[in-house]
Image 1 (cartoon, one colour):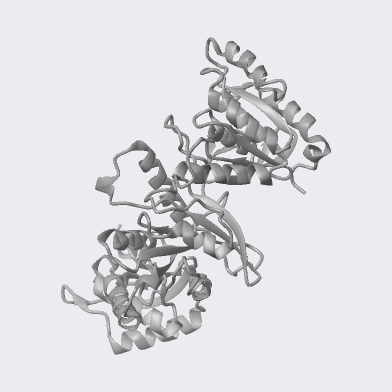
Image 2 (cartoon, rainbow, N blue to C red):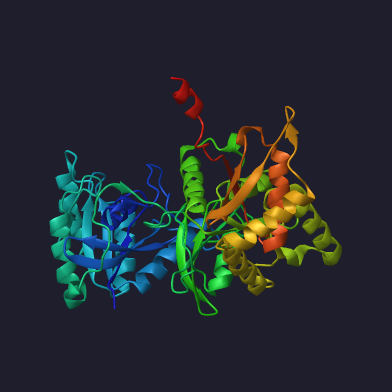
Length: 475
């Protein structure tokens, strides 16, 4: 069983910076603002020859029960309970604080092996903070600089000594520690063409939407535990957090994301970083569940998010959350589905499912829609039936004449999936009207049941092998 190591401490001592260094990628958001991390995040890590799972946590704060800070602290204490080893981190530059002593007692009561880490020792005067750390009674402090990588060898030895044999398991193949930028799909090309669906490979599903639409509550309801921080406050989630899950024997990787407000309202640096993580999660997802608030659906921002997903070529599914607050459900559902078809024609036939993350209603239907959309997103049409359909479609509605010359359509072939992409060979591609391309796309959807996902059609012309021969003869 893999060793689990939790990094804990008060806010702004450098926990996420150390997490990123151990993971070898810039995964967790890092900023000078205290309290950036709110949810706990788990990821495989390597430190020299040691292999383990590292847990990034929110800063421990002393706060009353109903507050957001108290819920963040509860998440951190859950991480400590799950861990086999705790890295208790202090800021050596600032010295020992009263909160450090308070939370050291919290960690000590958990009766878990503890390694005391004094961070930010790359500045003048940090030695005094390292000496003060002895007063916590957690053993010898390990002086490091997580930003510059100093003291990593000493930290490795301390972890190995505290964890014993559990730290010396055969290391898994993980990325080497470094400063390379992390990507939400972890080494997966989002545009890679895969001829068949691998049932053993998890489906990557991102959950996106406006702030306070119920994204984190939805994921908690799916996995059946309070894994993600939730509450009445808007904008609680900042990082894109991944959660492994299994639905009806199918492996799923869920990504919770920060809410996306209108671009004009995103002013602060931290919110820009959060939105950037959400955009990255969309790009590296396969299916994207767009959460609409059923009490106020089809806001302009909702439509912009859905349009972004379609332009990125992901497989979209719309869910209308908070369905338990809707009174006339039958009439409302008919109206919402009509608006979906009218306002989002880019992915005609997109699945729209009413759910209630609070009560659990409709979650199975939502997952069925997500898996079905994923299958369509991976669909490949054989060239023979495709061109027989093209012949019928062009006979029924021939291409128009442009500048007195009729356009000719020769053949079509599918060149990729994820999403389905086709190449249409025709004369004068630059003159082909977009209305005729839309006619062909709609015909593809009807003939081969490719509803609810984007379809790409590229226009090409074949070179004339006889072009230039007359000129060569005259020459």
